[in-house]
Image (cartoon, rainbow, N blue to C red):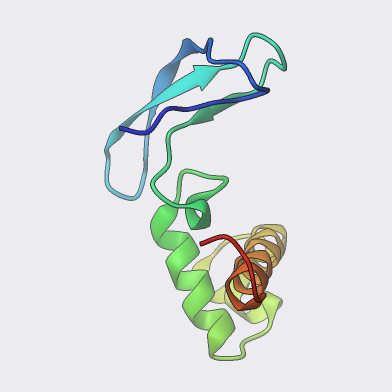
Length: 104
């Protein structure tokens, strides 16, 4: 398991759990005493932020097909804000992958 570091501190406190709705898995949450940020250990940056991993994959596939934000939101019964946030995250991930010299 990888070590979680936040605010350059190694001291993190357990901050409960939540049940991920997509696969009903119990996910442990942590809290940084310095910045008071709470987060969970995630497998991939594409899962950030959120509990609905399968929704991220669906949104990304629909974005690749060229559908608009409103069309995707209507089709998946989610808000346009969620689609916009995932679109921004997806663009950042694509920029990092296509930029020469980017850390992989």
